[in-house]
Length: 193
Image (cartoon, rainbow, N blue to C red; front, side, top):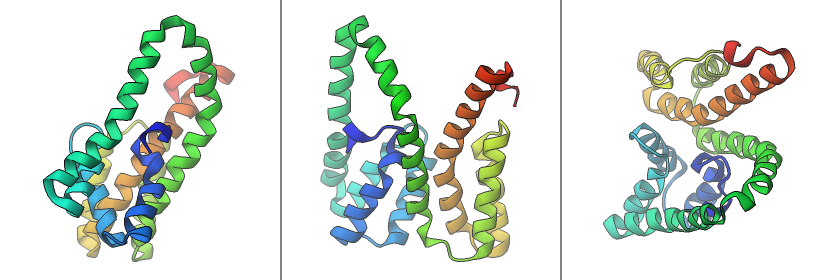
């Protein structure tokens, strides 16, 4: 999966969810969503998700196998591309531009897969509010996650809301960057939107 994870780990969440929950039954949808919530709250890359899932399924050996199985192929591909140097610069730039819609679609699918355990309209409203703020404003995602968690605690939905808001952050950041690039190209506004 790592070689097709354009847009990061969030882009392959639906595939991972399908394998771990639906195909193999190694954990429930709620357990998967909790694991994702843990992984995005840990500082660093979201690739930690594989270690968390691997650990929950098969302990420490599972964590190591899942993490290395996801990271090693991508690292090898990147080292190979970097060694090719400038020869691949133009084709890779075109490929990156061509894959942008795929990345955005994959991020949306990832957010939907993680959010399928929504339990109430209050959770949906809070998660969508966080998404709107993240897309329209340059706000620290941790601040919004804290606010959403506080609102969730007040409504009795703390766990679910922290899962849903964290699943929207990668999608919102991509949308925010695309909006900035569009404004810069078309209106000369850059990141002022």
